[in-house]
Length: 328
Image: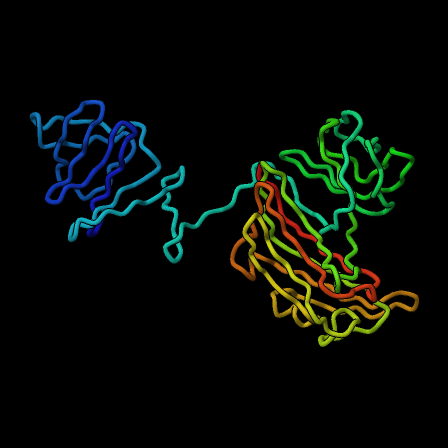
């Protein structure tokens, strides 16, 4: 063991270190015993000898997945975490290396949307329903966004048809809902005029849910050829397009005035040539983990918000989406 004594502590034992000797306190016995020096590893179901009470032998039972290292020179303590096979879990720059577990394995693939109206279903619906009746269909627009929200779940789909208050949606809902469930109608196309009154596009987590956002994407379609100095096919913006995270406190992520600004903020971008009867395209994707070193975490009603502060009506289409997964 070189310069270390390594001791595995059982679940009935509380460990502590004294200045001049190594002491184990047995909570179940209520006495202190000086640990006899040994430099080899005490493993599961091993026994060790103590210099007290006629050198009684006590057995370490049901050990924790944790090891305590003592430096023999200065007496400092280090805690080592091990996995189920007793392999040490390493660290990088004083941070423990971990893998984020996704217990629900529910994906997040959502559009930012401008909220138009909020209503409720008129009755309960089960998983797999594709037609829902709502109390008020005002604000519902064919081929635009519908969101269905509970305390833990979030559905986003498109409105296919509107027949009075009966809304046909796609894809089918993937969880049960009741007459108290929130239904939202929204517009996901950001080609709006925000030069006088800024226009907000949001994504908001349910109250009891966490989203781990790993990528963010955008796409712009225009009939005008695009380059880095423009915004889409428009001249560079005056006020800029902004992204924030808000939960009472505002975190600013970026403010972009021109196409090159996406690249400068970590997006991998590309231009698409115009088809004979189509549009010029500009799109990009930001790998948040690769660029920022970690996921973007949203939880308990936090919002991501993109604000249009200029006149973007000259664009045919601009949309933003996120990808990730849900932790419930």
